[in-house]
Amino acid sequence: MPDLDLIVKEIADEMRARPDRGEVASYIPELAGVDPRAFGLVVIDGAGRVAAGGDADTPFSIQSISKVFTLTLALGMVGDRLWRKVGREPSGSPFNSIVQLEREQGIPRNPFINAGAIAVTDVILSGHQPREALGEILRFLQFLAQDSGITIDETVAASEKRTGFRNAALANYMRSFGVIENPVDYTLGVYFHHCAIAMTCRQLATAGLFLAYSGRNPLSGHSVISAERARRINAIMLTCGHYDGSGDFAYRVGLPGKSGVGGGILAVAPGKASICVWSPGLDAAGNSHLGRIALEMLVKRTGWSIFGT
Ligand code: GLN
Image 1 (cartoon, rainbow, N blue to C red):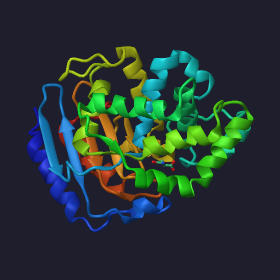
Image 2 (image 1 turned 90 degrees about the horizontal axis):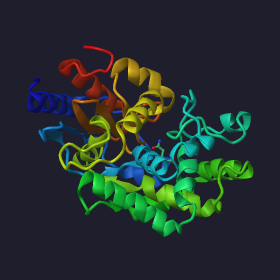
Image 3 (image 1 turned 135 degrees about the vertical axis):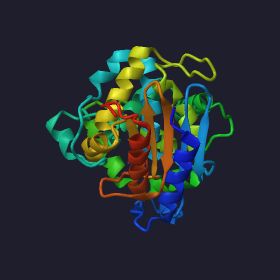
């Protein structure tokens, strides 16, 4: 068994000393003010061992990491019918790209690009008021992380709503094909708010445990989803979780993972651990620059890549 405490501490120390940090996302004005020197890393295994380094308990904007949890919820609500509205193929395009929607009749390539997550959000919203749908998503995260203190950062949500013209374009375009069925403003409102949920590395790593352990949180004993569904969500995280950087992430890290423009990455080492890393500086594809490097180091030292040691 690798000495996780030591490994996590050494990685955190090394990352905090590095000068190359990437660029903090600025297209959502409220995110531009986040300290680029922040770095957190938490690894939790099925026996409840926790290795934490750096800013493990500082809440940050989870942004697109919420897409993993909205996908899980929507599959729970409508099952495989969800795949009529969204595909399961890597996009090879930036997270906010619109071009592919025209070629494929408004059906987004996968649930982890913005268009796909907006379509998934619309499914969760159907038959509910926006407030109820959002409450459902927030409570799901509180349940998974076993922490009722998790909240939405309203300032980030408002900042994104004010500037989210591209997401509005995606939603309206999908609405024109009937892929979005609710009023576009409602769907976008719920989408912006679930992206603006604030969580710490420790909370996110806890929330991801069910994906690492066949759909069941081994610490609480709660069964969240079937083993088959967990395996499938992990597959989509591996192939689509980092937008057009997904191939490179699989090559370098070799774990299912989901990034967000807040600088977080949730990564799953099946049967081994749930991992969350946070460093706000992004690379050109909008994924955490040091977050990816930290995971690469972790995998090298633990041998946890799903492709072998
Ligand atoms: N809320 C962000 C957006 O819609 C999420 C993008 C991301 O994290 N990649 O632009």
